[in-house]
Image (cartoon, rainbow over all chains, first blue to last red; front, side):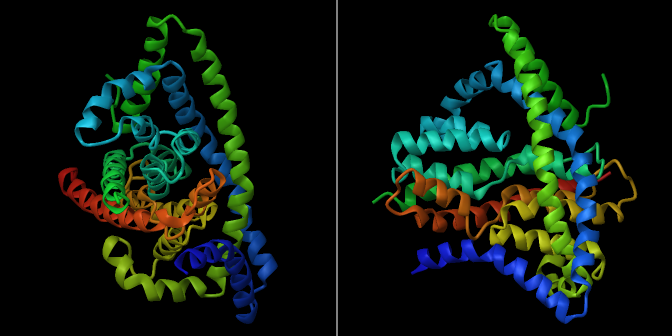
Length: 179
Length: 198
């Protein structure tokens, strides 16, 4: 019941928004087409303004990853995370999650295929992926769009959130799916 | 030493440690290749973003002009307003923040980034120091990075592609984790506001 509802919701929600907003606009006597175009015009500049920031951040993360420094980091962090009860196979996902959306999606897919989506590791990986966003991407894009160079404590807050949701995913899945 | 705000330091550490590590382990050539391919990838990402940005900003404009944003803001202001005490009640920033968080919760995936950027732009109009993030911006970012989602559609699809017997069973655990992480992050955010106050 709940599952079907969720599936239906995820299929219907975007069409519903795309239907309701223009119809309500029309009923409120808005020139819907003109308003849409006017709003959409901003999209181009904004996307272009983000570009240099994305280049900077993605290049840095990519060098860090390709050089093997990330793997060294994972090896170094593994015993520490194991102390907190994190299964060793999930350590790469924990480190990758805040850095790269496509990278963590790749790792999670591999975990799902290796251990099976209904294994504990598979369930934890799914929950980790679903419950957080890619902190560095959000940080780069949101602040880049308004030319904020000094995000102050925002990275700290974002990363502490990543650690919290990762550990919570591990513990809550272990508790929920232990039987 | 340059002006070392947190983001400068993180960026420098990522690049410098990566290059040194590759050099020491005798594979310096991967640095050039990965840097160039990542730069290309970033352009691709931005270009892909243009269409989605235009779509959702267009829809958002209709919602604004028709007064729909005002109605939704009016309904959610009592809760969301508490998290953003520095944003005036009827400021457009409040509407944009509320739309961002709503899109996030509904799992509107690619609508979140355009709306979030719009919210940032509105918040920037309230910012006295244009190159430095305000407390409200940090709070919005905190909420967006924990990504509170009711329907994690991508993951459900991924699980079902991997042959899961019950692809949606992680909806419950995701909800609990998101709720916990959101509360946690808001507390950290408040603490940082006090600690980093100048």
